Image 1 (cartoon, one colour):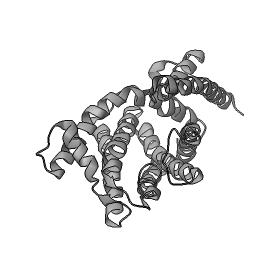
Image 2 (tube, rainbow, N blue to C red; image 1 turned 30 degrees about the vertical axis):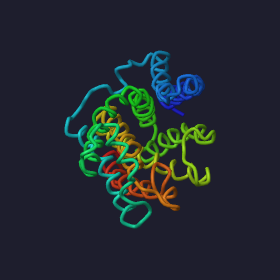
Image 3 (cartoon, rainbow, N blue to C red; image 1 turned 45 degrees about the horizontal axis):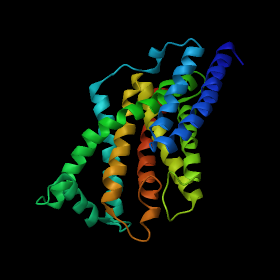
Length: 281
């Protein structure tokens, strides 16, 4: 093992050790604050402390804003993925458009009782994609400066693009497993093993997209925008908008087959681009 490999391995080991410590604190705070933000921020805290310990500039975590066009692309790509997935779901009867009670609840909460279904759905999408998205950014940044800010470029020093995407994505997925085992994160109606499998494949596929843009831009912001927008579109718009039936739980949401398969298809495209463009990395 070369000195460079030893240095990288040491840095990653310190990060993972600190992540375990910070994870424990963040997990404890979930129950005290009834919010997931402390757990998400724990990843960034671990990365920043690691940088301080190994005397790495915090500026190296990829704070540059980068290209506007690329950032906008990553903001809207999750919308395209969700729209495609739920068009399949609604078309083939894995769920239906739309959940009447959800739409009526939107009309009441926005005090827009006279609006049509499509108008209120479009308005809710706009509010979710702007206001809800914006207030989620601090937590998302906290997570992304750990995964894509520190871990991905560190792994990239000793691994290929494919291995970096798979390993960082696997760690990211495993990060969620304790919450799933405890029933804090997940759904009712499918075995926990199925949920973990589907969710982990979804996360690892997403990792290929995010890793590609981290390599391409040197910035964490494409990942922040993709991550935040993906959460908002899926959790606040498409899942509650879908009228579920007996089989829906197997096919919709972050633990369902269809969004996972659509994301994998997108990931294959970026995996091929990444292998081609970064084969010498």
